Image 1 (cartoon, helix red, strand yellow):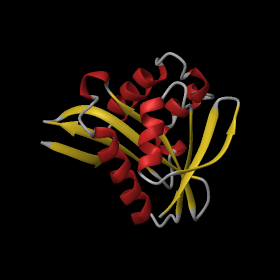
Image 2: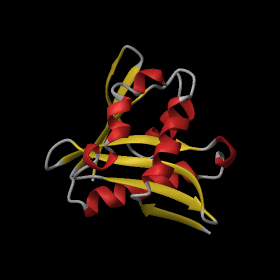
Image 3: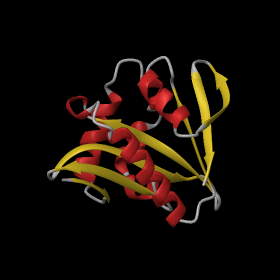
Length: 145
């Protein structure tokens, strides 16, 4: 059974975030990562961290970080390699969008590296996220809620 939960299981979250940080080419996405890991609750205050489970086994995560009262940033979308290809990224994105709406946000923004995360980038485009900028290999994207 697939379940997506807002989580405060910081041990599981840290494990997923650290595993994600080891993807070759994703290093630039982890600026000030140690500080983030030290205070996940504070870093994502006003937002949420969602963890996906399949039969109670964590398969992935996505986080919502407050930018201001109307805009949040999606961060840390990660699906463990052994769970990829099953539609979990779309499920996590849809859950994040629903949670962001519930939190009162009007827009979700984020950055991604299309050269490193090509499959994810194509999924974002299919789901209606628009590219708002591209610089140094990093695409900025957004969607209205």
